Length: 601
Image 1 (cartoon, rainbow, N blue to C red):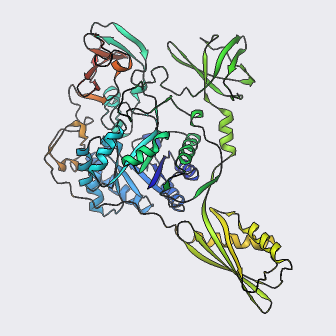
Image 2 (image 1 turned 45 degrees about the vertical axis):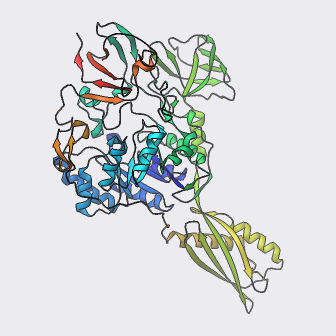
Image 3 (image 1 turned 90 degrees about the horizontal axis):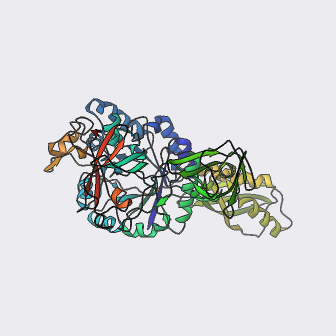
């Protein structure tokens, strides 16, 4: 079975770095309609990335996954054609109007149902498959058993997130940002209200928990669950992070690519050089496997909605000019490292100006005292290490050299066979001088040809000569042969492995009544439904659920009546900045919902 490692790219530079580090595909936004407004890219950059990716048989998927208004249909159609012509391999879609547009335009590239579609049941999966989606990006809050059930129900490809930030809400069904600020997550403008700090209060206004990031989850990490996910039916393993920087993407992609070294992959080439990855040294809020085992756990990062990073030691002495640490084994501090520690009010961060051994010189830090555990969320040393040791990805090429010798003149025919199935033949010569030491000349030829040129890593299988004679070649001549073969291979497109591309179907009414959670924002998408409640962004539904989740604050705080036999009476509310958000606890489904806000009394 072949697996795809799918990496995020905020821009083309990061996408290229992800491919160099072992990604089989990258997902990136064009200039509009991507669910991260801060990560848009011109079509010209998409074309550049596609050209680079396709050299390795790697793929570029475009996030076209916002909801679309009627006034934007013409713009969307023009952009779809431009992205197709730029070389995009597939579109990641939320709005069902794109199905109709792509079919009418004869777009010809696959559609993938975004995680924004909140696909978490076999019934939902079959509906999207019936429309012609080639791949479904499943909801993150699923168990392996639920993934297997969906896999048995459909024949299209399945994709699943394995690393990175987690939305606390079922994806695509979060309206908290829209309700609080008028900025819609379904339009790519989420304010990340789930990372904000709240008080938890009861109906009488009593504060049960004060000033905590009560909706903030840890980051996903399923590096050790790849085999189980593959056996459950997942073919694409996705890393979150289209807003992350290049060092984060390089580090995490390399780590997961190494974890997948025993699996067949959907692209070609091996990373020949580079750094040793360490995901704990780049941005993270601590890690969780969430609901993958079908069990509840402590998933929140209430005290640290931002990155805490790696534990580096415990303060042993506070000094006027800084402090000393009892360092964790193997930790080395570097000038300019960023540090953090938890306090009762949240997280305090600061920079280390001068770091010498276990001593850190810095400006005075409030709350720092002996016994405090210090974390490093910016490792200057590791950042420099990454930059100094870039990955180089090479497609394997086997060379077979045949020596033609006639009348004292030598010509060489070098046949090349790439791992993706390309073949070429490069002729060099004539060479007039015979090597006196045949074995030594063959050793020199092998040494000079068994190297890299461009994106190719060459290995000589045979050097064949009918009369057992070889020409006397200089190293410059040997290098010229290798470069010539590489240039010829560059003119032959990589034999990319096929990507599922199912025919799109008309949006015919299926007897489904759409609620605001179906996110219908235009007249085209409404064609699938018998009755339509407009998207929340168009008409906020009174008393609407702003998010629903398997994450539960009562469980997290040990207040669950089912699991902890807590009998805390009455409703609970999240309060922030004069807004009071009622919490709904659906104990039958073991889910929590956040409801539309009411003003605090």
